[in-house]
Length: 310
Image (cartoon, rainbow, N blue to C red):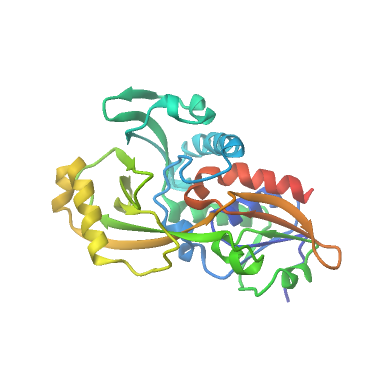
């Protein structure tokens, strides 16, 4: 028999788990319905450097991002437990004057010839997702493997439903503005790289980045809009390694230990956080459309969604 719930959160990635945690720690009885285990969600594939990347609307993103940054700075005190570390690196081609108001909240940042050198939270997502699940359980929340065909199924069991379904919102809401942005990564044995690097060309689907994670060096990447392929492309993988090796030549000889593909859940109109009534008097709260920055805004968006729950 299912547990009684005040709120059912549909979606078990970083947005769903963080939102559920906010609600559970406010004393609500929360269940999370997720089609996939956390390790099987798009969130688990993310390179997960904190940075407001490919996300709108800018006027709201700045506040959500800074709120989340402050949480990660606290969590970085226990990296083995939370998966969050503060790591230095360079954003190639960036300048402070070109960034949003959130950039004023950064410390340990300086302009160098290559771009911006800054220390930021870098999140080991498999570890962080397990930590979120554990903290949610400690607060009384329950995570269940369950797929849904409509929010009415959840509304039949709780007065409030929170939609954190990412790409699934395209069919479930339905919202035709939700679309995938395909990201491919290569994982190699780390040849001694201790700092991250990124360089994004807004006019291209190819990006260059590498993130030193405990399980290896993550190399990227791509940002291919409306591409739903979930299998790694061998040619793309070779190009990713080549681009990263132009920045750090030792990467060229690193042994490949894995490939990852994730479909970022972008939305043409940007992030949607709003509430609407369901037939029968229930409340549906939306929290989706985070694109390539779900990790970056997770806590700010979760708090905004939780306020709508009441």
